[in-house]
Image (cartoon, rainbow, N blue to C red; front, side, top):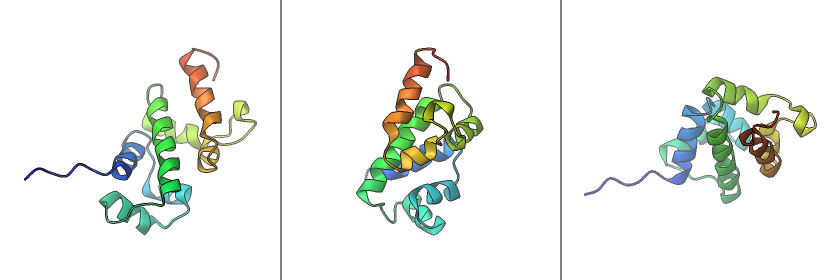
Length: 116
């Protein structure tokens, strides 16, 4: 009998925690749910709402891109810091509000060796 593949949500959670330095509390605040709900997601007992899954996948993608340049602690700090290139907004808030494209545009400039 083969072992079941982890659900995409579980993979996003692992990436956010391992690569992004995000804790269960961070993810709970980001998703607007309790820490217990995040634990159920991580264990595969529950699945977030589809819109939440999409936003979490954006966050996981951005964390992966940031990890190419920063340590996990720096990735977490970058997500929570206010950025001049985002008109003083925090990346974590933009991602939550389904405005990930603005954050990804900054990462594209970073990839092109432009100022960040």
